[in-house]
Length: 322
Image 1 (cartoon, rainbow, N blue to C red):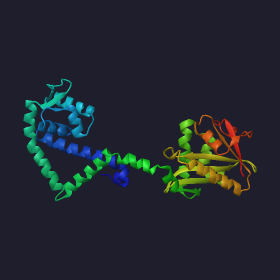
Image 2 (spheres, helix red, strand yellow):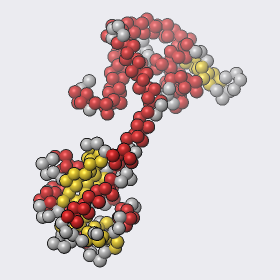
Image 3 (cartoon, rainbow, N blue to C red):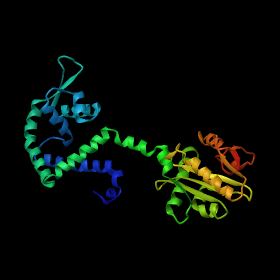
Image 4 (cartoon, rainbow, N blue to C red):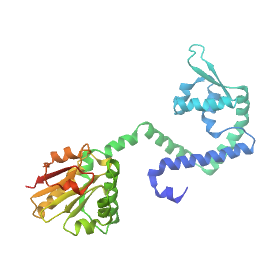
């Protein structure tokens, strides 16, 4: 296994299983070929089950092997083409196809049994004592978790609004923090590319957020949930009296959890600390949730005309800070 995959940890678990499976399949296939056994390793579970349960139905195979009916059908077609199995209608219900080994399949199964014995011995040698059983137990536990929808349930738990807000920290932008610089650009680029294009004025700010936003008198805040940066918002000075709430972005995974509202509140408090009595922002009616959300936060139509700063913007809003 490569160091890169190991470094990715549990998030690469599926990939590691796939790579491991492909490697083991290739090893077993080479062993079969060396001993003139015309058989594909991926056929083993179905082929062996049909031998143990002659006449088993395809639906039962799907259930017992834990694969889709389409997958069973595909494997059956391959084994039929190889002359190893046959399908016959059930005597009571012709719609049900019973699967049995052909005479050639029976002969090959007999020839394969010594090979499977050797493979089992090789694996038990590689994993002596209780190691093999421990591996099987861990695989069984993982299968149970997948069948039990443990991961989807875990996602719902992690993304609960209350849990997110409990772990939410909003901190000032740190120019020395590479993650702040990286996420300020990435989070904004995500929504800009989804609905519009990244304009030159955006790229300039992404390239030098400290020089173009903070140094002239503005501010940038970063939102993190349990240490993971998920949102950002800026206060941009346009003139001595006009400050814009801008560069609001929240990761798509964390939207609708109150993070954007929390960022707006922090930026508004920063504006008040500067003695500002009004805050402006620009948006677009093309954004399905943005304008209604800002209106709920107290922003109303403005004649300031700030929307002319961006090609994508077609509406200016303002809010009196009390």
